Length: 363
Ligand SMILES: [Zn+2]
Image 1 (cartoon, rainbow, N blue to C red):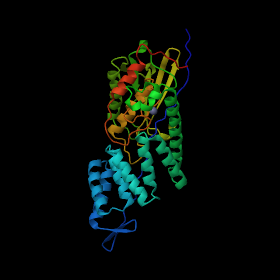
Image 2 (spheres, rainbow, N blue to C red; image 1 turned 90 degrees about the vertical axis):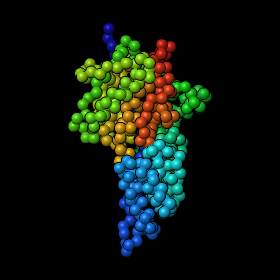
Image 3 (cartoon, protein in one colour; image 1 turned 30 degrees about the vertical axis):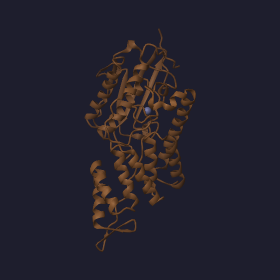
Image 4 (cartoon, helix red, strand yellow; image 1 turned 120 degrees about the horizontal axis):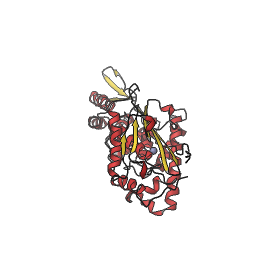
């Protein structure tokens, strides 16, 4: 029997957030410190520089403490509020972060970083309409900004996502309360249902060596492996894997890259391709980026973990995205540097996809 493969069918969007930090603070002049044309005390100056150092070292708790102190001592420096917002965002305090970004923006409407941070925060908390609006205002205000191409591409991706969300919720009014639903099956299968057939289990996974790829760390391999194992666990054994050493026998191959320009969308941290025929999925590839897309959001264990569970979800057939930030398949990487476990909604979604009642509808 002849088998015909359908080539690449899905292009994934994984939009990362973008933030940037203030430039170096002003220098000492006649034993007086000035920043943004404002004179500040040496105590404030010290808190600002220390806070910034903690922030760069990804030591976010200390950064918050120091920058809060700085804001008390010198309340009207917009960059300090912006940086405090970033530290709060990275520790998983989005509401407080948004407040700081808004303060920074009102103190200096020309501070590009505050606009970007604010838009990124809206995006990563699922407020897609506000995110698009803020990014667009940014592009109007700062048309020659060095990140404008990247942001224009982000806006495009978000608008696609927005249109999809609208079409799903209009065809299914229940989805307006999607974050309270038991699963997000309809959201991620809106382009049709695809899955690996039972006969192919356990799926053979090959993870290529990342040795020699800049930015690659040996622990990345284990993090990726664990993401496969975790999806298998929450699927109640409906999806199973075996890890193999020969790529030619693999159902799923995973590779590492330090070059974001080889990805279809430059705002992506990972990319997955799926191949299917009438029996369902027959091949999948995952490529993961080993360097941060945004210098101020270093690729920590936590962040790589979030990317891994997301891309593995895609390769299992969860082809679309969820609009709820807590879900593994949420369209945007979180700004928070926190470990993400698969949730009950993730578990329910994968079980529903692989339950006997569900059938392939993809073509
Ligand atoms: Zn995705």
